[in-house]
Every structure is written in C-alpha cells, then in structure tokens.
Length: 161
Image (cartoon, rainbow, N blue to C red; front, side):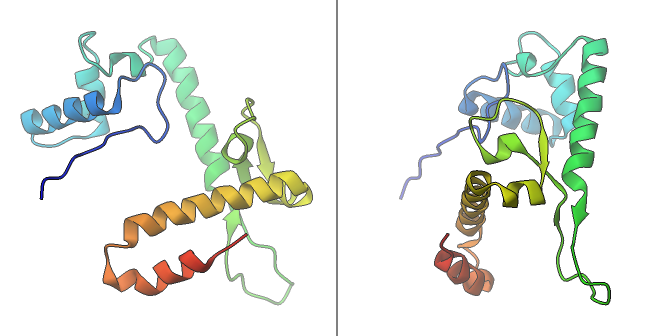
C-alpha cells in the first residue's frame, strides 16, 4: 500500500512557506548536515534564498527584544500552582497563567489569565475546557498506535464536556 504524506502547520509562523516546502527544506538540511538542530536551522535560513528566511527576524536589536518577550512568555507558561488545604499534600498542579489567545480565537491581545479568572467566567471556562479536550484528542491520536496506552486511549474517548 502506498502512503501519501500530508504536511501542514499547526500554527503557521509569519513569513512561512507552505508546510511541505518547509519540511522538504529541513529534510534537505538533515541529509546535508547529518541532523537538524534549531541552531543549524537558523544558520541555513540566514541566506535570503532559504524558504524559511522570512520566518526569522534578522534585525538584531528587534530580535533581542522579541527574544526577551519569548522568555517572559516561557516564565508565564511554566509557573504552576496547586490549591490545597493547609495539611494536604498537592496531588496535581495546573498552569498559573494561560494565554487568552489559547482559549479563544477572538482574542488578539497577548494578555494572560489566571485559572481562577477563567473558571469565574462561564464563556471562557467553557472555551478553555473545549481547548483542553481538543488537546486531549490530539494526544489520543498520537498514542493510539501503542498498545501500552490502550487504557488511556479509552479513557480519553469517554471524556465529554
């Protein structure tokens, strides 16, 4: 049986070519260099002939400012909390802040919300649960091929909101 590969961006970067063009270009780098790393990708994309050249900010002053914003987003994304009674041990943690743009497509700002703010807003809470369910289904799709995860697959398939 012959398989057809379908390529697409999960989120298309600014200035990005079609996904199949990007993947072929990156595979070419892997063949040429014996592997691919972010550093190699930046080096190869530096040339204006690269199909990925326009995905990068080449003005170093602007790139430094944007990188600090990436670092700030990382800080906001990586903080987790668990609310417990005084004498309890935490069982699980959730992100302390969630980008509003991850919850609703209508959100154009780069603001972050606390889980409490999301839970207190009926519409945001519903949209966030739908987003989480979508992520679960995506994970489910990736792990279905492994028998070891069959119980997890079945549990995810039963989740309804």
